[in-house]
Length: 219
Image (cartoon, rainbow, N blue to C red; front, side):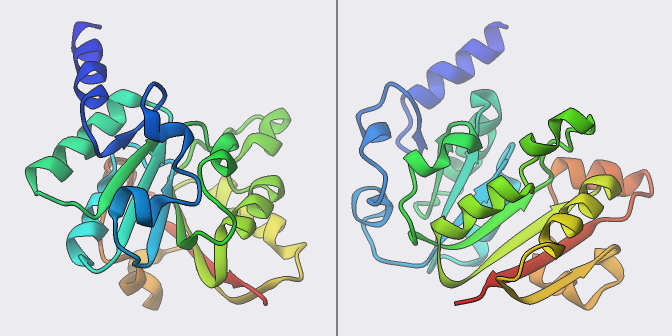
């Protein structure tokens, strides 16, 4: 507990974490490029970022882009925040909030790309609407993306992936839609840059196939 509280104290002092209690928290919507990054560059949003392996990894690979990792757990964000500080990355930030409230912090069309990486599968049937790849959330992501922006999703969980495919199969507003049940054996692997989260490494080591899909919303 002392370690967790210490991490909360650290991120409360860091500029690369936007969280409750900071003045920027309630003013950031629509202003990420001008108020935080202070440059007008394409911005990628990583949802359920956990420790931020993807956000930090992509920030290293693409210094010409901006990246925002979102998670509700401050002790997880501490890790990504620390990596970013150690690597002197000014093009990555972390937002501490529930994904359900993301529209309070991201304006319509503000994001150029969205990643959803290894979210909680919420296996209980009664929790289907709370899954971050359910239709209610997909509708939300559509608002946040600029026209032509990609939505990308990775998971090890077969049931969640099949659920997501069923949800997306009911839509008529998708284009350039591709998916694989075995990312490492797929031509789509290059799109993921071989960045691996802790969960990906853990489940892949157990023999789980990594699933991936991506699409754009039709304009």
